[in-house]
Length: 388
Ligand code: ATP
Ligand code: FE
Image 1 (spheres, rainbow, N blue to C red):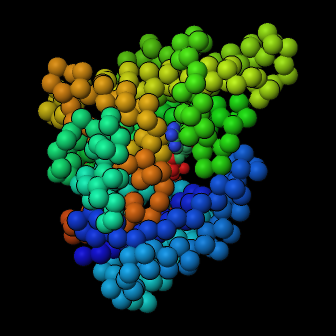
Image 2 (cartoon, rainbow, N blue to C red):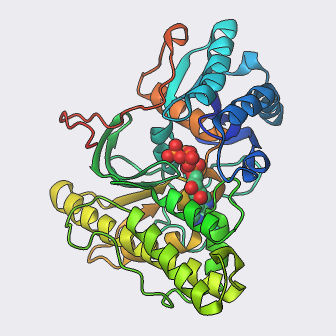
């Protein structure tokens, strides 16, 4: 069967048609980076207006890329939370309208579950036309995965979710069954990247991560001695607020040495060293927390599979380092990461999450569907509830 997916939780309007085997038949994405670049972040009112302007065109383009009409679509999946409420409503209303008009099954998709489930699309599927180029194993990216297995990743597995709004480690037991082992006490990893980009005056439209990553490649990751967060707390939680402050203070110190007013004025070499040092410590924090969670689930549940998902999973250096973390263990772990363009928000994630929900017999009533700015995640079979 084929599902049309719609995503509008933040600043990207996405739609895609996916077949139940994971093949993306057609997709379209309208990003609002240029609009938000000017303001240094997403402005909800402007985002909503842009979603309204783009949504019909994006859906039309996804269908036409798939060479399909609405009548040929078997179900509709729409992100209903968490996210910006007025933005979610644009996609949700459109999805409900189409489901009711064409009398199709409807799935209200949880955005974080959708990020996680992307790691379950069988490698080699992704795109009908790319000959496997976008699959999660080589040749797309030599270090993307330790698993050279062509099968989909099975439950249960451990997931590291690193996005703009979230930073969590979850035990994934099945569709709709997640328990949170760690979350962030303050900022997410994506936010830390965005704030570092802003500090250095780098482009932040669509997130500052790609700019910080690119700059880091030219710097020395050991040039600044930044403290690794929360070394005394032996749990799986994260904290990035302290690192943000350390980075800003280090940058300001260099400014004083150079006689400059603000970090934005620093020469390329200094900015590259700051970016590389930030990225190194930010990922070291991930390795420590994730390593601990891996030990726990390996011991308690015999899990040896890791999914790395969310926008920051697009980062090549993070992929390389977590790949080593997995292969360096006594018994090596399988690691699954979606191709970079499927780590950040787009329509295929809503479509695929709906496929997964439908495959376990779960769907929603389009008539009754509401949106949720906050959408507590993680209800597990053993009744564990969300940590925070
Ligand atoms: P959430 O999914 O939690 O609601 P979101 O949808 O806004 O948040 P995503 O689209 O999953 O977040 O990810 C966007 C984040 O990923 C941004 O913070 C961006 O800076 C970061 N990001 C994207 N690419 C990279 C990269 N190459 N390196 C580091 N960070 C990146
Ligand atoms: Fe997201």
